[in-house]
Image (tube, rainbow, N blue to C red; front, side, top):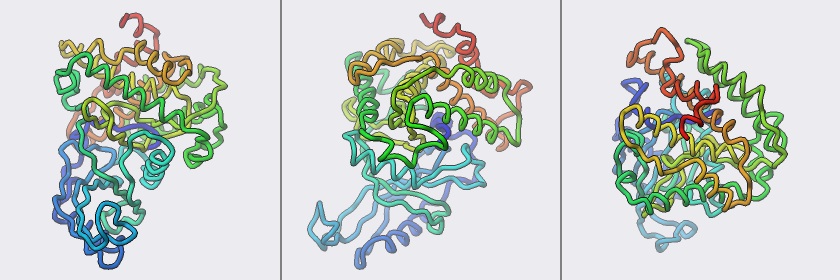
Length: 396
């Protein structure tokens, strides 16, 4: 994932070079050596239980591990100074160029800074961000380390609406999860003075307003598409959508807010259907609120469309458009506008990412190049019908 888009974790085992997963013992030694240099003298860190989850994404590498060290007087919050304490941790590592990254840059330090600031400025549940490391010496690329939190995530493979703990829950439980997930967006967008606290997220030439910031997002999305297709086929459909979006930017004089960017329930850990950890902040940006609300809605809609193609019932009463908008408006007092437009933008972003992901799969010999490049977009039909204005009428 990156500041230009999100890498969908449902493609976690697609388009990955065969040698990209590393040996856990090598990682254990590297992390232990790195922690020895990071912690106070006498900490004597011991790293254990290193593992790479099966659902490791394609945008960055996730390493789970435990680390035990001797607490210092400054660090001993949960134990006496001199006591040994085990910490459950996660490292997120920037992908290397050899893996044909999905995005041109990853800015791991920026993600770390966003997480720390969100944790300090709001009650949005984010893991504690411990360290950011820009030197690639330890793990071969920049990385950051954060707290590991126990919880469950709506799965992407197979999609949660195909059959999962979420589809087996009651309507009331799913309603709680939906409302509390929308609440995450409301609480995030309520952070005051985001331009002062998150000025490092402001795009080049973007002003403080929602419309100005969104125009900068569109320009960056165009740049991402050009980068993603520089060495391969181009998509006439994506280009047509970009042209239409650029020609029809809605007027919006509301202030830009801090947007999560990758706002979807697949990036939230839950316990008892309540969010306990909001993850994946590499898409964070200043922009219009509707970018987040529409992205959260579209990513569910994407799975619902897949369920329909597969002949499965899906979850038609869950995360419905009007319900989500009403919940967001009730919590914020903000009236969502131009939702069709921002939903098309969400579909376009997802299409561009999927186009790049499929290009990687072709490069790694996992897929064949189709005659029509637009067939590389899994939700091609959705994008076409959104563009010609028939998608919403078909749903209703």
